[in-house]
Length: 255
Image (cartoon, rainbow, N blue to C red; front, side, top):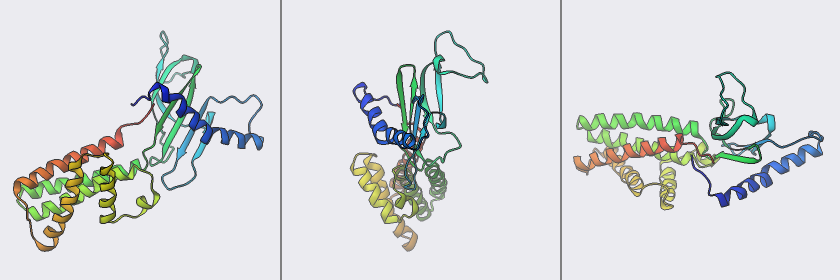
């Protein structure tokens, strides 16, 4: 969990309120959907991976799971209800199973006199996990081929593992067109740009670029212009890439 610097906390709250929550409250008020006694306690913005307009939820409409830290002296059994006045802090927010796991979200909750903000702007998490699992399978095939000294097969499978791990990371960034259709060249170009911004280790980009050329020669020409030691090094780097992709998908971003 990452905490915002104190000086940015209020600004972030104001931005979410001004951009999403207040316009939604105004719309509902004009339609007569809010009672005069209405008081904002919670708000949630759901960001869809397919480009749909974000959905804004208010109070009881909010659906979120979180870890609650109870105030000193308060204890609860598993099925006991927990009330706002009994909570000291909330953290590790994430969407429930009722929501599309490929959505991002921002959730605002009022505890006492302060507001707690949590967000997860990673899109396509479920789809990215599928790509990582497939990448792992190709990696295992590459490792097996390496042990059998079938180096052409190793490089072909290793490229597939590298490309899938790269795509999994890129899917976390919202882009409906990229989610719908990709090419080998498109993934490579996009990942290189992503690396240029310092988002991944340079050796990850180098491995993808190198394996792209090696795979073509190995698959279609039976040519393996690389030493056994260098292939072993690539196996180690790609294993790191898959581990890195797993961490990016699993770690929850909340404030």
